[in-house]
Length: 441
Image 1: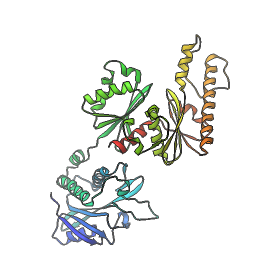
Image 2: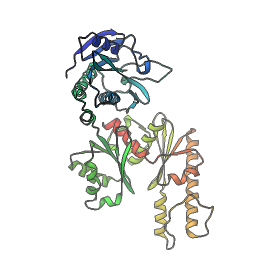
Image 3: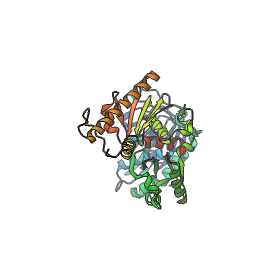
């Protein structure tokens, strides 16, 4: 169905104007646009402050509520507008139920849905207000505008045309009660595939539009060097509904090269985070950028984006690393210490009688047998090492840091650190996802 465009310079409310047009008997559908509103309305009787330069529209058409519930349209409206507007920003747009759109928890779009009856017919009216160039100041809620988060030139008329085109696609299906088809054809979403190639473990995650990890796939890195194992590991993942671009953090260049070659042979595009212009999202203040591990960059970006404060990320991986990020987003370097598992293995390989053991947090001050003595040595030794490094960094910068722990032994040491700390086992993946959204989308 083609919607007739009805333009106004100013109305009290585009939804109010739609009601009057319906009740006038001349229109059964339409697409109302107004430059301003003098009495814009939001949900639950709230006022929508309408500033010039923003978008104010209402779409109305006849509906037959037999199979489709009115609540379904709330989902449709929010998803349509989100789908259109996410092309203008790399920031994540979230839906606050029932029908507000937010960027960084700030409202920039509101949708008011109403149903009226006229001459035995029901009409659905959808009013949409989008803060494009300015946002009102309110004590009740924090608002923002799209322009603040967009590097593109935003042309209001272009957005309006896209909204009209999308609604025209679904109206026939709505009137035929084909909600399943609407969801399938209009709102099919593609997930992201991102990964971290570490010296010990390679992790690939399936991540949705809201940066939620849907599935995690792990493999020992050394096993991926065995013939055909890359195909066995990655091939099933490429059959998922995923975007064509795949992003990795890698500290094993040879393996990344092999994975990259395989992924490209399957008609996907593969990227490593250090090949992207990371300076656009973080300032890296070190002597030799080439020597900096991609996992450490991803950890730092993930942590700072999450906490927006001075961060110290401790990663218990093959090496135990400490990475420093200062406000307003400057990577200042860090510390690399021997990894716990690697130290345990090397001690076993270099001695005749010392066994491999699993580090436990319930150790006494010393041991009366070999394993307990080893456990005490590693637990208290690393506790001292960690706390001393944190103290040195804190004194050097004369600043407080949010301490984030990640990696296998984070849960072991969290209660042995003098400073308050947070565990986030997915901080690397969160960093990679943030890079993807901002530099690769």
